Image 1 (cartoon, helix red, strand yellow):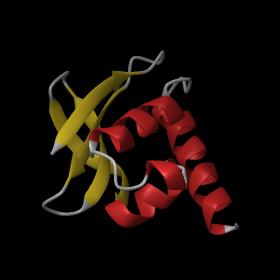
Image 2 (cartoon, one colour):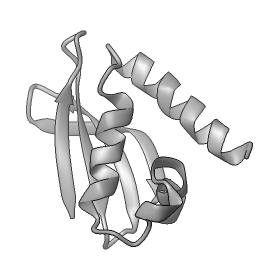
Image 3 (cartoon, helix red, strand yellow):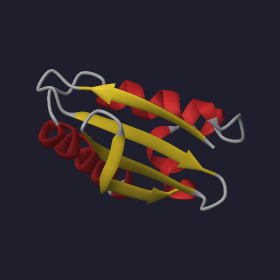
Length: 96
C-alpha cells in the first residue's frame, strides 16, 4: 500500500492511493485538509499498469505507478482539470 497527497493551484486536495489488497488505484477528494471523502477516480491495478507505465517498467516495485500518476496530474490546476487529463490518458491507451 502506498499513497500521496497533492494540492492543486485551486486549493483542492486529493489523496492518491494504491492498494495491493484491492489491486486498485483510487484518487479521493480530501475535505477539511485530512479526510478522504468521495472517490474521484478508480482503476484496477492491471489497467493502471497499462495506462501509466511503459512496458519496460512493468513488474517493478509498486511505488513507480504512484510516481507516474503524480507526474501525469502534477501540472493540472484543479480536480476538474485532473479528471479531464486522466480521462484523456485512459482513452488514449484504450484506443491503441
